[in-house]
Length: 156
Image 1 (spheres, one colour):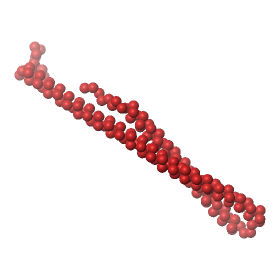
Image 2: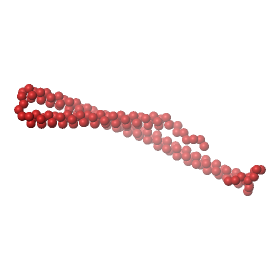
Image 3: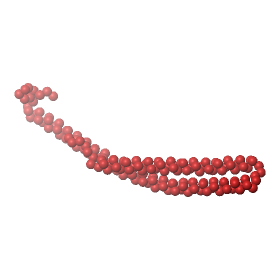
C-alpha cells in the first residue's frame, strides 16, 4: 500500500502561515488599541487630578490661570489625537478581523479536504488489506488440507 500523500500540502502550509500572520497582525492592532485607550484614560485622570489640586489650592494668579489654560488646551489636543487614533484603529481592527476570518475559512476548507482525502485513502487501504487477506486465505485453501510444501506443513 502506498503511503498517504496530500498533493495540496504546500498550499495548506501556506494558508496556515497566512492565517497565523493575520492572527498576529490582529493581536498587534489590539495591543495598540489597548495602549492608546490606556493613554487616553491616563490623560483624563491627570486632568481631573490637576483640576482638583488647583481648585483646592485657593486663589490663582493671572499667570497661573494662563498656564492652566495652555495646559488644558494641550491636554485636549492630545486627548483628541488619541480618540482619532482609536477610531482609525477600530476601523483597522474590523478589517483585520475580516482578513483573519477569511484566512481561517480558507485554511479550514483545505484541512477538511485533507481529512476527507485521508479517510478515502484509509478506506481504500482497508479494502486492499481485506482483499489481500482473502486472497491469502483462498491460496491456502487451494493448496489443500495440509497447506504445506515439500518442507512440511505451513503453520498459521
